Length: 188
Image (cartoon, rainbow, N blue to C red):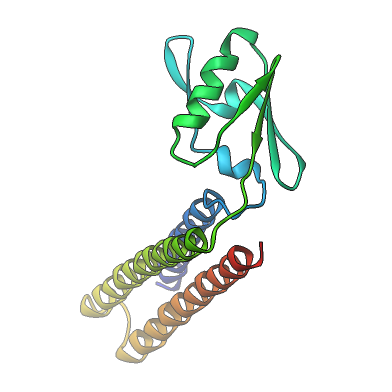
């Protein structure tokens, strides 16, 4: 029985970690005025008759704090890469120089910083909701074990505390990630 409960704990941890990883990816896409390759991750380029991630048509680099460059491997795709970055809704205006696409990162306005902070808070709340959903599933499983008579009432209390402790740890990590992102947004 302990093996089933440990397996449950591992599954809950994996699912909560997944919610945290999703949050980190979403935070990576928030433009904070500082160049980051993660900023261009959502960009998809129309190439070879299909939509491809930008990373599959060129090398993304950050040569300086306010500039991202994309070294496009196929010269015929330079225009497509420029268009994809411009149309991605990131507020960026790329320019090409041969096979190199340069993407300057503009200075953030105070208004935009407030919008970014609100978006970061929304992403964090979504991650908290996901973690609490995983906790609810875990509690349901533990209660089902007790209902079947596989664990005692004392074990139910102990395992409920374990699930809650796991949840609290992940919520704290989400809050810490949000605090870091807020600091980054306001600092630039």
